[in-house]
Amino acid sequence: MGNAFFVVWRESLEAFLIAGILYAWLQGNDSSGKGKRALYIGLAAGVGLALLLGWALLTVQDELTGNALEAFQIGTLLVAAGLITQMVLWMRKNGRQMKARLHADLAAAAEKSGFFGVAVVAALAVAREGAETVIFLYGMSQEGDYSALIGGALAGFAAAGATAWLAAKSLARLNIALLLRLSSILLLVLASALFVAAIDRLIGAGWLTPMLDPVWDTSLLIDDTTKAGKLLADFSGYRARPALTTLLAWAGYWLLVVIGYRRTRP
Amino acid sequence: MKHTLHSVVFGLFLASTAAIADDMPTFRLLMKDGRILPETLEVPANTRFRLEVKNEGPGATEFESLELKKELVLAPGVTRTTVFAPMKPGTYKFFDDFHPETGQGRIVAK
Image (spheres, each protein chain N blue to C red):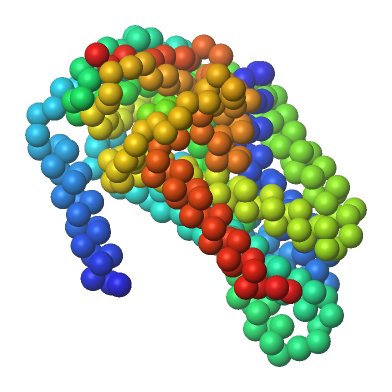
């Protein structure tokens, strides 16, 4: 029961956080309601995708399909990281514009592509970790442990929702400028963690050379194999023993983000 | 762009078939009841090898190691294999991310 709670909480927190931050931002910047509709459609599509991906994970047995699935999962990590980053830059550019509604035509076009991005980001956030939750819950139902399944899983979902709701509420309480800055930073850190995970898995699959592995070992300081350390790794991209390739990719990501940020002054 | 994509996909395909064709050593790992058997797996250092992970259930498991950069989700009854690049001698930790309390193991490369 306790374990089911923790696993479901952790697996669904990312999706809830992304949804919560997007909701808070749309609340402050978009009064048309279209953005929120895009968000809901994306979340619903994500649940469907999670079930589909979960089913795929249930049926893979051989190495070739295993590799194809690995490639697909790495692909979703990269796309999610890229889209979140692009969306943050789009938000930064359009935040005040949309609020003021000065250039109606321009805003409408930007709105359309931006809201599509919101929907895709939400869908990917749910689908990625959702598929693992599907497998986990399926496993529990196989165990026949329904009270733990329902109690633990529901409590986990509820806690993840509450965590994200709290984050979104505290964000929404801030003034618009601070909300924009803080939610941007949160999303960018999350995107960098997804990017780091993708690079690591590319190395793990043998599709990318690690160059030097590890560059250093800080596991005495923060051990990423503990529960809390793993959480930090999942959400910030922290690695106790990073490979040089991963480190360079991480640095490259932030360099590009800083350049992109400078270019998209609101 | 399209051409590059094609060659990348083709390259991945070649790489994956090559991994199946040659006869590298295979090691087996059993995940059961939130436990990992054996908890310590000895492998030769500086050698490519294949790891076959079997989840006997009853619950789902996730073989994961940040150090080894691997993540395999296994529904009950599923067996998945993964190929490890040559490792330097040392101890590498892995765990069952769905049973972090009980499912801890390590690979020792000698």
